[in-house]
Length: 287
Image: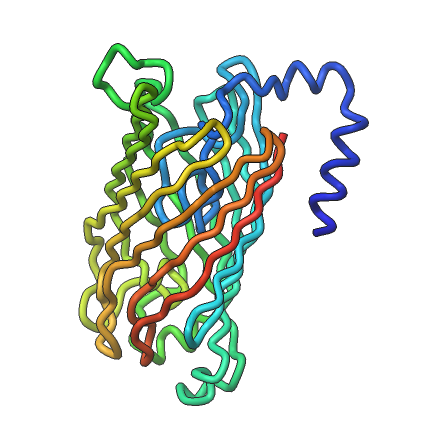
């Protein structure tokens, strides 16, 4: 929790010009939380909205930490994201995927861990999910996530073609204020195996495939929302079929500087283990 303490102390010493830059002009909860690959959105899905609370005249920034212990594996991710003038988002995330006891069965050693660096960018094209209430046009953004995995030899051994790859996506988000409902749909072009944790492409398929990410959430109040997500994934490796991932979540936004998300997530089959599911906890702090 040290990073939260440091952020709080830094905010007490924020000079006046920084208050103008980090203007916090967006409505509470509209920046979303931190998606597992670092973008602003839900836990699994990238949303069209730009992260943070900076308006079109300001900047928003956040850091996050997420833990997802699964039935036979565990995933951790941490990162930072910056939203510039409610138009451009830049993000970085680090992921660590621990194979625990399965690593020994796979011949790579118990506790063998895959690491991945993810560099992201998102550009808002048209619309505003919140303020365009008199129009059916959603907020629409395009983005990319460039992923670099450090376990190229193991990835090749299980049939993966590359340890580096780039995803491209287009997302549309809309908040219906009168109904307190937010919906998002994202179409992603990807070669990633398990989000890139097992590399890109495989012995079955090595071309980009079109995948879908959907989110829906209900806002019980300005601070509390619950929802669900679905994300399809390609199945490129012959060692195991890779199915869709889904979650149900609850997020509590204490204020514009701190939010907590808890969820139940099911990632389906991973390598030689089926039904990989578990509790999900994500903390986000920002300006």
